[in-house]
Each structure stands twice: as C-alpha cells, then as structure tokens.
Length: 166
Image 1 (spheres, rainbow, N blue to C red):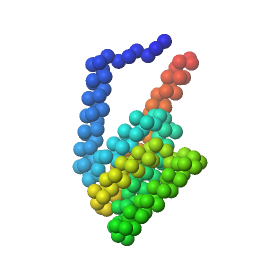
Image 2: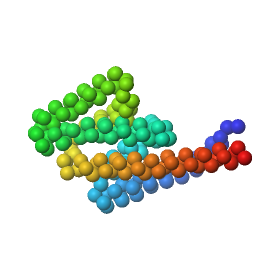
Image 3: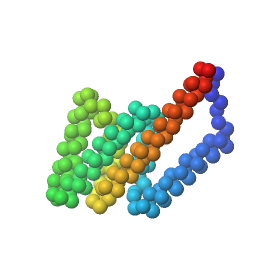
Image 4: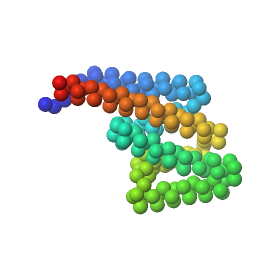
C-alpha cells in the first residue's frame, strides 16, 4: 500500500509553517545576539542531504563543525597573526580536508564538511572575529535542536513498530 500523497493545500501549509519557523527562529537568535545562518546551514544540510536519523545527524554535526572551524580559520588566523597567516591557515586546512576526502578513511570529510567549508570560506572576510564564537554557538544550537527532533522521530517510529507488532 502506497502512502497517501498530501494535497496541494497541505503542502502549502507545511511550506508556510517551515518558513514561519525559520523567520521566528532568525528573530529569536537575533534577539540574543546570535547569527541565524549557521543554524539554518545545519537545518538545510540535515533535511536536504543527510538522512534524518542518528547517523545522518552525527555526520552533519561532525562534518559541518569541521568545515565551519576550517572555514573560520582565516578569520581567527588574521586576528592573531595577520592576513597572510590567516589565509595560509585556511589553505592548510583545505589541503588537509581534501587529502582526507581523497584518502577516504575519515568519514567526516563529507558533503556537510565541504558544504559548510565552501559557504563559510566564501564570505569569511565579512565575518568579524567577534562573531566567531556566536557563529559556532548558533551551529551547535542547530545541532542540539535537530538532535532532539531525531530522537523524537525515532521514539515515534519505535512506538508505531511496537503498536504494529501487537
């Protein structure tokens, strides 16, 4: 038996709810001085490219966090050692990630890592050093929130499996 497809009205309502969630979330994060984009990166990547389960969550968390830190290496290095060293740190970080990716033995140099690294390093020069910690906190809040979502979805799935077996 195939799952029933939602109506167009249901699809519109879900899309509006998702958009409202992102807008409210962005406003709330802004109220406490955190940027919304790292949270949204985590949400986008987990819900679009990863599987919404524990394994996908861990892959997105670890890979994305590696990409985030390496992407911010230029900001951090520039603050303490100057622009040349900051750029060199980014280049070395990218070289290490690409080496691990080609080698294939470290599973966390994955799509999440590359996506976040590319996005962050593309506009790293526009991120002030003072925003490094808030950016990482926002990303980790996204991870925590979606970790809870994954746990809730898994517990619902177990309850349905138990009810179906009875």
